[in-house]
Image 1 (cartoon, rainbow, N blue to C red):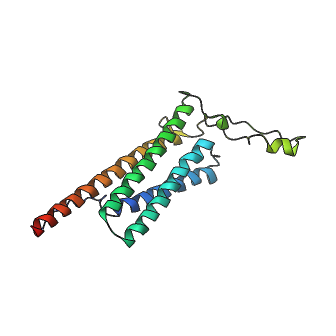
Image 2 (cartoon, rainbow, N blue to C red; image 1 turned 135 degrees about the horizontal axis):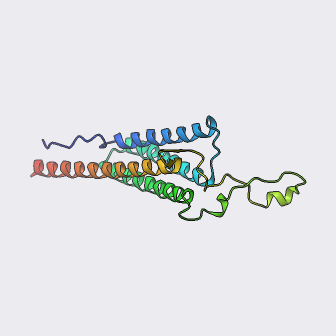
Image 3 (cartoon, one colour; image 1 turned 120 degrees about the vertical axis):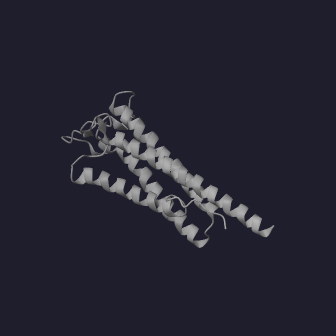
Length: 184
């Protein structure tokens, strides 16, 4: 029998860990918002969307994989998780760059408070809602903002996802070659 690499990211382990990591990041973001009273800006909310998408994709992928366990499904799922986390890294790096004033943020991130005195309701509903500025980092640790730390976490999750896809693919090839050798 062929020795397979028993990697901690092989099999369904990585999608389960990706779900847990996504939920931990969402829990942390909501804790900063609820306990720390840091209102999220539009780019903060986009970064959360990535974790919701990754968790939902991993759950759906594992449910499908349970119905028909095949390594090719796990390879595809882990690759897609890598792409989702890479998207999160891009958004987080973009947000950190806005905070460091490397580039301008989107118009929806300008911040500013709405004047509620003598307001025309129809006119107010037709204008963008005032939001928290994406350019102001409300919290930093060792010079990195929440967006900066999210970028680091997202890059790590991207790398782990692609390692998991590669390991699962290599194990599937070894199983295929072992089956061919046994048949021949």
